[in-house]
Image 1: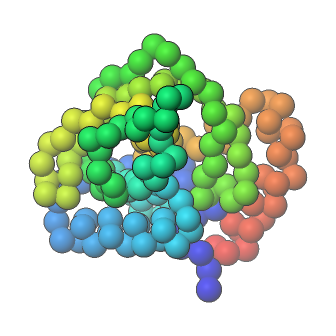
Image 2: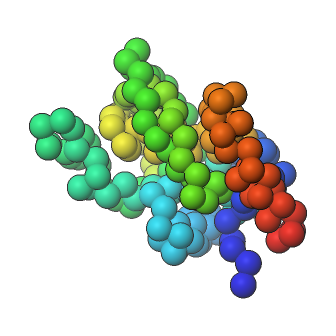
Length: 183
């Protein structure tokens, strides 16, 4: 059976999302499906574009134990998981940048160092259609920015340095070929 996740090379990954007009039963079913796919693929985030959809929706489930600061304390103690994020807007970022390796379900087995703001403030609609504002740091902030990129057609590839693109050229070529074969 083909993977429901679009692999690098699939044109769906470059499409920009469309705002959700209403948090309907269909949108909630989409979010639940996305969570199931994300868990099956052992990811911590998934955007609608990664399954060939264009709704401005992503889901997250950042493991509590994986998101701690240097002193071993939770980075985001008030945030419960999983999160369904609808019509997100990043309304603030910190000046501090942090680089860390990122993976992506659309780039299986590929990890690239990406520098991103250490903290973000996100405004979005929740499952109930209510406006929420979330301040995040650490792995959650990174995951939010990664999935937000997907909603704007920005991929892990776009964050690669020329050296990283060269180093991963064969892997990227193989992913594109796999994407064409599964289309």
